[in-house]
Length: 159
Image (cartoon, rainbow, N blue to C red; front, side, top):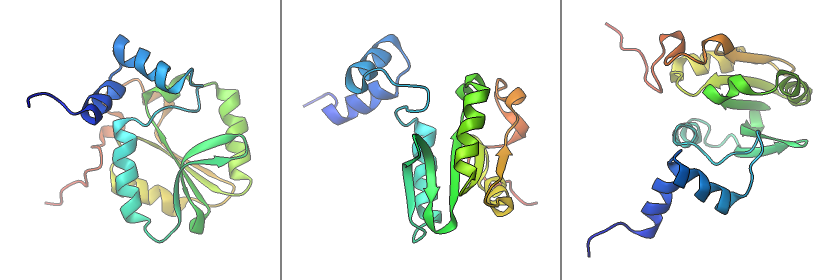
């Protein structure tokens, strides 16, 4: 039989930012606030990478902290990782400050652009301390296609 399986069609439709895809997401998920969203393909890629890296460290996804959800929480390291894409440039600055203050009361927070390479992310994680936020992007740069000349999830080759 030719055609797609239902699960493949669902993955394709939910990944689309077309009128059809957006309407389908609204029907499936309802109206979604600014801090909750279906996983993007890049967030799913990071989930796979971080699952391997933090195996045995009690890694959680979309973990609740107070009234917020964080992208990744590494319990044994008291570490919160936020994968920030281009849409984060439009978040409310005051709301984000309140959110960060709540998170950093107990945890270290690393905010990284979704197209960062793994080495840069790890350097940021090594600098993280409870009560601090490490930003591995510049909000002014988020409108550009490739901030910081970084390659997504690719380690720079050594010559």
